[in-house]
Image 1 (tube, rainbow, N blue to C red):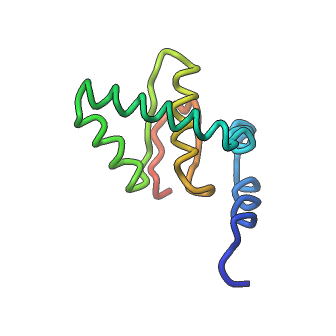
Image 2: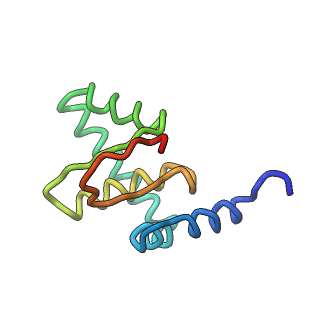
Length: 109
């Protein structure tokens, strides 16, 4: 028993994933993609900081405390890149992805 290993957490996350999109997202992540996604996040952070530093601070705060992040964007590709980049930052098991949700879900439910 003891503390779960990274592999055990990964298997647990895959079994808990409700959607095929979540499973595909987890399977797509690799070290090369990590670098690309970190570049994407750097670009997003710079863009938000230039527009309004409060936006960047709010995003960082939401990530740290584990609240829901709602991404609204006309470009499906940009939205997916942003979400994939955020997922890469967080440990497996800490992300519940519900792309194209029509309603807000409280994080504690």
